[in-house]
Image 1 (cartoon, helix red, strand yellow):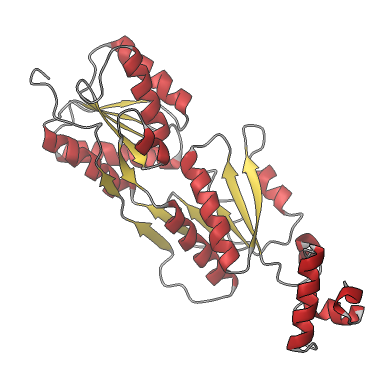
Image 2: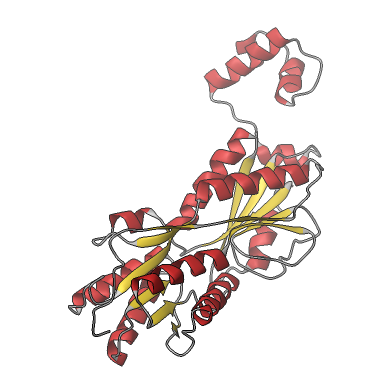
Length: 323
């Protein structure tokens, strides 16, 4: 690279380390040569050298829905705008939070954004800046960026009740903090309408297979509700598919509401009414907050909560008169 740029190796090192000592013209020549040669700095080596790494760790669960992939895409875009790179570390059934955190230790990353696992007290809390996306954490050294489950669930229940529904079931997200938050929000919204005796919660999960399993349970039990609010769009569309196979029409027989307003909602056979989350905005805010923490900027509010809106499509209507 030094030969291509017509400068000494020492000057190349100065430019690539972003250190003082090179003129603007020299920096331009070195960077142009680097681009021509396809050179990319070794982020791991830079982090081990004792400088700020400009690396952000991202911990996430695998087997999650399209919404989390949209979040990851948003994180990459937001990080790049601020001159940061991401180091991903997945959590799987055989690879828990501790192992995911351990693998990140190979890099001297500056902060951590967690898309999962949704835990009440992240292992790295207090050791470096940590931002969780999607759920509430009480730890004073953890920042939170999430969508209000309470507002979203209230909007879904209010909409169905306004159409005349009383027998409403929530297909929950399993034993996670987010699943518990939405479940409690559903129960509270139903009780607010005086529908405590007609509400029902069916154990579910986050994946399509969980929605299929729950839908079969509803069909086998009989006594179908007039409306279902699912944990996310993936489970909602899975329920719609199983019901269709059984000759149960959405929304004529059962109204359906999802969560995330993902591409799956818009492209489903019957357009799925869904709570709008904003993955790009959640990602932007998460990166902005972690960069603020890394740089020691003052933060007034530890938690950022976005208010979701209900996107109405064709999957909700008034219940049959006999319902």
